[in-house]
Length: 84
Image (tube, rainbow, N blue to C red):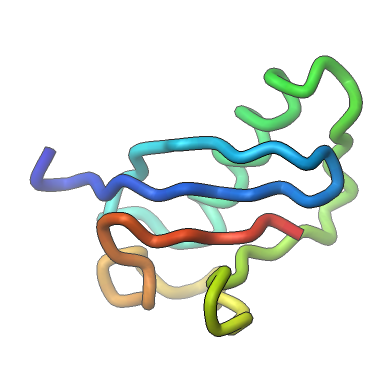
């Protein structure tokens, strides 16, 4: 698991949290799209991707840049994020 980090993603629209391992060698935007697919499938149609979602750090509220690689971003093992 050297190339992955464990994160918790809270989705306020459906009031659910997801524990996910994500690759550190991908861009945040790519990972965000993977997370959106997971949430769409798990929510059974209550969550719809409108292409306007962003990832935020749950504690600081900082928006995470989609163009950064995960390994260079503020995302670390155990990070808590919000998909909103």
